[in-house]
Image 1 (cartoon, rainbow, N blue to C red):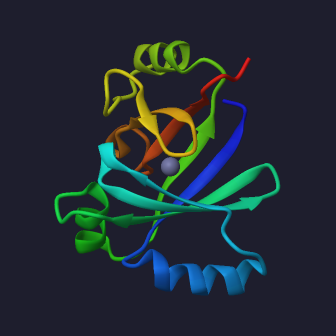
Image 2: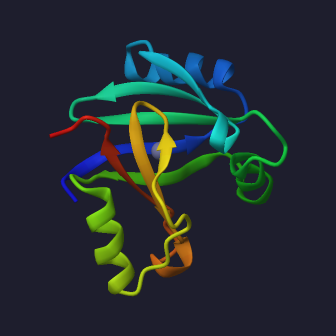
Image 3: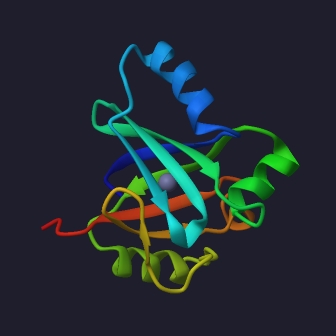
Length: 135
Ligand code: ZN
């Protein structure tokens, strides 16, 4: 793993939260993107080498809606940048970590992603992401 790619924060409303985070960071978000595969809308802020990702559910069945229902708004996951997501998934699986998806999925912001189950990582939902076209 090379760096913290982003930290994902579950919010009830991207629109309202953008107002808060734009004030907090002193700059606007640089993109809003819907990720249909996860039923979420996302909004991104650049923070040096890393990013903050706000996540809003677009459907009551979305994992974000369920997370907020159970735990309220707040930090949802930490994403790490990896060079080769297939190799890293294999390495972590061999180390005994539980992968939530068996194959990388198309994530937001031009990434292939895979999540690790929080039960195998001390309660932290971890996302691996590999930039598509990163060589
Ligand atoms: Zn993420």
